[in-house]
Length: 185
Image 1: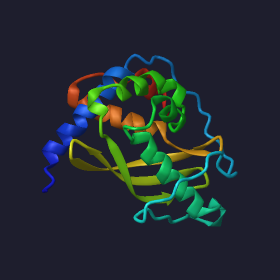
Image 2: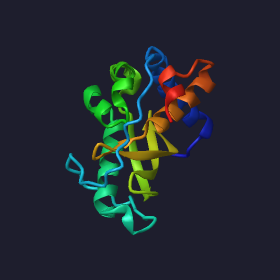
Image 3: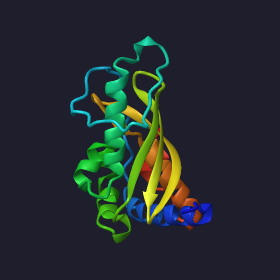
């Protein structure tokens, strides 16, 4: 199957439009609670995909393979249509701010069979990583990038990455960006 950028963008836009519509009801702003701890994760990391790779900047990043495994597992779990909304909120930085948007999207028919496949992880500090992934929906794979952050000992999807998806949808659908995203750092 050949990738058609316009069709892929339309599929992504449709998925993200639902996120935007449901997230707009969230009026509270997130608080900065990113942990600077390099302690071991509080959740056991799942096996990483063979394509996921790590490159650390400096020796203070800690256990690279464990971080990459947890980032990969948590990123893919966050975007999986089979993950309950309550669990997705725990995998997103400041997830409680976006809980209602996540819940609304998870119950939408457009969320069926949505997933992400991490292709690489680059640790950029002891608390951040760059993530390359493919967002998969309606048979289309859309290459994307984002950031993972270490929050309270767990690697999570950065709220700025989530908000970037919502902002993209807002520009495609002429809708507004949620107030929580305007406050996300």
